[in-house]
Each structure stands twice: as structure tokens, then as C-alpha cells.
Length: 233
Image 1 (cartoon, rainbow, N blue to C red):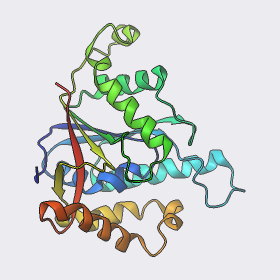
Image 2: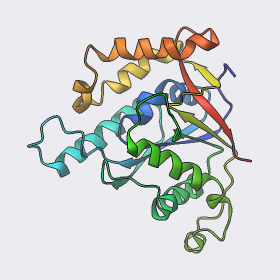
Image 3: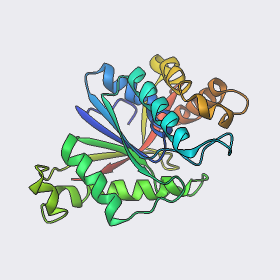
């Protein structure tokens, strides 16, 4: 599929601040333009990604959260939630699944977007794998059955079925979104993550343009973001 997947409410689940923008910021911008509501759920606050180890980790996490909120607003994201798990120590636990289930039941998306936990051809941060697994396990079957996390129903969070998922960072893409019209907006959003500039040696713009060109080539697109589609029905 080489078109923008239809959606009215989209939840993007990322491991670290800047993961959602880096992986699918162009697609998010296109969804927002098309009238969809998009929210981010960020599992950690990126406390291990300090360019200067002498910085106060608590202060640094506040910086990273603020950068993510500014970047998300620029793309039109309606809100960002942080679970504040420790960076580099994320595991697919029942507790993490429950936190993601709560966010799904609260927001009630028809589509979730997250990391592909089974990528083999590319290097993969362990937090990305754990977050991808936890998000998929939360989306099916946990969030749709009242017998999972029944205390949430008592708090007013009713079960909800998510029909579809898109996985980014995949080595088996089958869904391609043209981001050429919004590529500069994606770049602008990512420049708001000032604390992470050193993570892109050689320049953010050129690195992302090259990645977007490589992603779009199989679909005949100049610049694209690529995903693996998962049917959750």
C-alpha cells in the first residue's frame, strides 16, 4: 500500500522522546492535515541520552520531555503522555502492558503505531523491542477484554478494540506513506530535540532525506516513511 492509511484517532507508542517524530513524523503531519487526532505515548524520558554525563538526570529528563512536547505541537499532535520508565531498562512486563492498555482505553484509537519488535536486519535498541512487544500485547487481546486489568473499568476505562497497527523501524515494510509534502515540517519538528543534535553526525537534514529516499524507493516515492501493517481484528 502506497497511500496514507485512513484513521480518525491514532496513538503512537514510542520508547524515547524523539522516536515518534523520527520514525513517523511525516505520516503524523499528514494524518493531522487530513483531520485525524494523534496522541503520543512515550515510555521513557530518555534519561540515558545525556550528551554531558555530569548533568543532573532529573533536569535532563525535563528537558527531553519539553522538547518532545514542543516538537509534537509543531506536528499538530493533540497531546503527549510520559510513562517515565528508566531509559535502557524497559521490559515487556504486565505492568507496562497495563499502562498502555489504560492509555488505549482512555483515548480509544482505531490505529496504533509503534516499533517493530522483530526487526532482524537493523540494529535495534532493546527499549524499542520491549516497547513494540508491550504495545502489541496491550492492543491484542488485553485492551478489548474486560477480564484484563478489571480495575481500569472500575475507574471508568472501558474495554476498546484497536483494529490495526503500523510498525515502524521494520525490515519487512508493506505500507509506504509519501512524506514529500511535509518533509520540511518533519525536519523542523526534529530540530526541536536540541539535546540530541549530536546523535546525527553529518547533519539531520541529509540523514533523514537519505533514509526517506531509501524507504520510498520500493514504492516509487521520492520521500517516504515505511511500515509493516498488522491486522488486529
